[in-house]
Image (cartoon, rainbow, N blue to C red; front, top):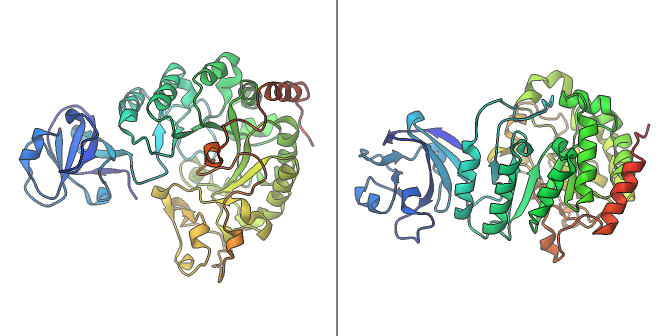
Length: 433
């Protein structure tokens, strides 16, 4: 599935956002931000819309844009960005998807060897402008949104604006903020984020090793480990929910058990820990020979790591790993985590009994799949449960809202217990050999 497409434009001007609407249905957005989806070139529709998005092959007149075949899935309630000078439509929100992401910036202060979204040092303030304009148009029934980059915390006040807008307009929508955590080493920043008091937010932070030298090498930033660890402690101190993220590849798999023991001992307050499969795009493709390992070859290390974390009372998840590549004891921790727009299944998956419970593959990984893909002839219902109940938080697409089970979002501990746990961890922070 594509989110950007070139097409025929019959209008000029600056880029603008629009909510896709259909004739005869209630309008969601203001008229200057409406794109009326029509089967034919009907100029009368321009009385109530900024642009007519023509699905047919009629000759276009002023104020019309051709709906490109790659975006034929667009429906009422979707939000798109029209760029007349580039003859380009970019999809920002899909009302039928549970994998929507608010992309705040391309800038980042790390250069991770496996980054799937290589950063660029560009002026992209317009991205947040678009997001702040779009948030009020998103249906309040939206269950969750991701917030990512680049590194969103580089925006500081503008990130806070986005969080405030989401809280105001989408109070029932879970937020999953991805950050490298380095700027949260400033306690005041963590306090400002906590002061937003969003009712359901998780902050996902990668920690790629239990030693500073290894982590700093993988993110290509000296001092990053110490900054991230202090950031994690500060976030825990102010009571925000934290997800620790580990990407498993050739440079990280050997020490997964040591990493797990380090997290269990030094970060016992985190809501969950997830082990993620490698996405072969961006820098990961550039560094493919150094990073690639068949997931079937690190199952022993992964199982030991999961066992240690579960024994410590932490919630654990395994993302981006097809079920057939996991040992039986690990399958209950697996999750359908790959966003629908970049998710595929191999021909051999067609007859697999576990397909509906399996995450499948990244589109970019389909050209280099594991040599151990085997369809299940049968899949017991008892195994078809995405996250093991090993702790309080139950994730969905990165995490499951605590509201799903009727409880108030929080970490594994609340109030003074979180502060006490963070101070205790900070005082004895040390790598475990």
